[in-house]
Length: 236
Image (cartoon, rainbow, N blue to C red; front, side, top):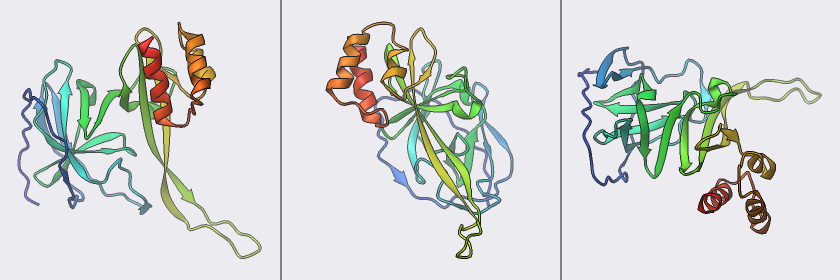
């Protein structure tokens, strides 16, 4: 595979279109190397090949899609082809037929991909392990913000003996898990799992929010229902 030095130059852009979706053949076993992006943020090649066969895909979307990176100083990149590898909790960049990833994601404020916005915060949930932090989708931004944390954990379907001879495929597969996280501008991040977990972390308007949840039959396993509650609270 021909290797070329990659330079991604950041510039301020106006309105952007993220409609482009490109299917690609991802190269395997790319050699390790680093190339500068800006202000110490670099990309490096890495192997996307798993050592064991796994059923399913580790990505939010297997296709690379046009997206934009924004630094903390407000500057933005040109459009680059991105996809979110949930299993490894990193964004992959496709450039010149090489698959790359950022080596200092904390220097990037936002990742814009399709109609979604992502942040990187390894300590958003201070009382949680690293695997429960990292990249989050910012779903609602306000005095109470709403984040979505996705994970894809490996599971092994082992063989189990039974009276019929046994069951199990002896294969690995991905199990997708989603956590809903809230965070006020002056408080700690917390899991949103129920009416109680939400109300316990609100400093005001608890009666109104409780009534809204009951009246609208809010289900805390549904992303859009939580969005409705958070947006209602932020409007008070």
